[in-house]
Image (cartoon, rainbow, N blue to C red; front, side, top):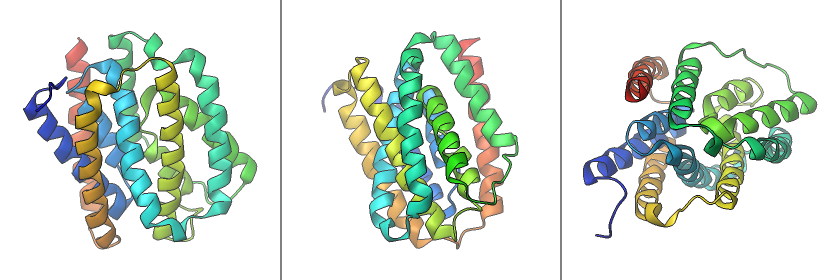
Length: 245
């Protein structure tokens, strides 16, 4: 096996996390991206967290996009794509690489706790202009924290016609946002080569989780999983804080 930037134990944890996260997102539309982010923060160098998370999420969401492409709402999707371009460009001069390890870790921990416990207001009517502004804002934030899936899910939940349309439109939108972040990090000089094997294994595990999760779509007890996920994310966020203090 080629030299790895992480231990085999950490690699196994990341593969398992990617599988579970994709299963959760595909079947329930919640929490998977935040779970992957939180585990990355406590297992890999902090400057690699957002770039790696973006690639893993692109892998799992692009697979989900292909498998659910017939359910994508183009009316919701295109304003989000345009906003993603604008938001990423605006964030480029203030990229996450400008933050210290402590600042970035505390930012990610705070973000994890906020999206876990603070209720996100529901948007029940469609507005192209509002969706464009939302996407621009969330894409800007995503350059620093990556796991904006819960915000997008809450924003689209009542605009989508049904659960399948929500999962499909979210997957397509998040894929686009992650792809743009990867392009940005590449231009900023992030070195991908040493991470190729961990990323490939995590993406493969995520694809497997998506396949199973889509079969369970709408069948799992959402409230139970949300409660357990909140507790797990809280513990991981506290571990992030302990790591730098």
